[in-house]
Image 1 (cartoon, rainbow, N blue to C red):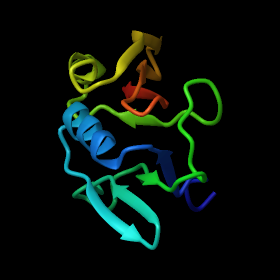
Image 2: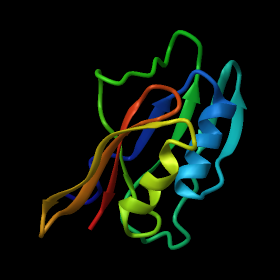
Image 3: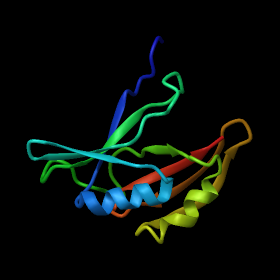
Length: 129
């Protein structure tokens, strides 16, 4: 395969300001909000090194088209920005989220994960090798 199968992801939000604050607080990043007609998109920052593995994505607010869910749909795994999901977990609840699963070893070869509910009601995962 020449490219990753996934090229982009979109996380549904009901309140862009609230969601932007949640993700900026938990991951210590800056999200850029752009408006396209009636759609608001909050872009996650790309890696500084364009050759870094992984993909990027966006928060998306579009009434009736994107509905957050704690139980349905795909789960996006976010890489820990510090290298240890425990760091992000310490900021989840203060940012308006809820911890669903604490840091858990997947395997020594794969690494660790945790599951949280974001400020909008989406189930997302945190990951570190």
